[in-house]
Image 1 (cartoon, rainbow, N blue to C red):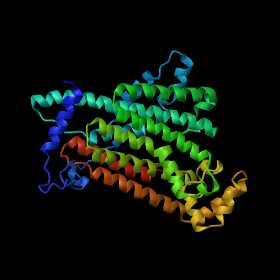
Image 2 (image 1 turned 180 degrees about the horizontal axis):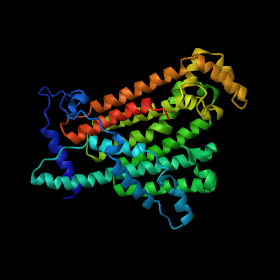
Image 3 (image 1 turned 45 degrees about the horizontal axis):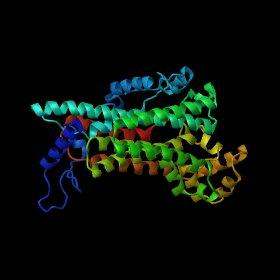
Image 4 (image 1 turned 90 degrees about the vertical axis):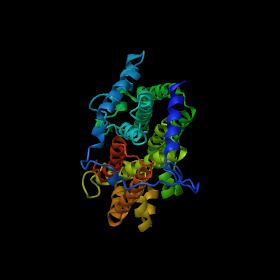
Length: 389
């Protein structure tokens, strides 16, 4: 009997043991409607733990494995591909942290019986496969950064010199391609066609989103709907579908997998919306103190879109383009007079609220680790909305 089959049987048994509605309306804890207490009241400990610290050791091991996975026969290619996995460059590893916390948030509790000990071994194997998803996600993410920096002719990435500046565009593109190929190999090794399809779709979305950004018509440039669709493809699809993959590997129902997806989707959109605000404000509350990289590249984001709604005369400035620095200043002046930044923050808050709702809609659990991880995922939404860099 394979471990996958045994674990699936345990999941099915656990689901059958959960209380369901006698009316057959699908109101069991894993049915259409969940009976759940507010998440905060489910957490026994009042101490708030740093969500990044909860899985820091696991993330560190994961990054070490990534360094090993990107080794290649051609040393120059290997050193280039490894650049963003070096100590000091990796930052907080936001996506692996979210995915490992999600894996804990959707895990099934195991009994202390002999059978429970056997299932514990199977759960360890499952955790390893979920770690693989985090590794694959990070390789795809880093590959997309490498390609983006070449397309944008960037010279820095999160305060560190960009790879294309150090190694040149050709090696940067090849290193990104190499990471994608390694991700494909790791994905195939999982042997799950549904997960493979999900993750392959995220790569397609990354390409689609970038294409939407560099080939925007005047009408599309003015559309909030177009902007949000592009943002989903470029920023949110990877984390949302990876969260869903983690739940699928755990053997959850489609409903629970969709809740994991919704958390990732809304978290990713909120993250980018705050990025758009910080691009104008930086670490200061005053406009014009950010890098202004988006507007200088002619990329219109949410704050400016909202400002255009308030001041239609701004449309003419946007249509002229921002090759002339004077146009940048005129646009910033309109943005200062508008509620563009405030409205963007409000939209980001709407998305983090939806992300929290998705976590609170997960099946009831009294497992301490599960509750701690869910609380951490909620905490991350607040960190995203309040960050200043």
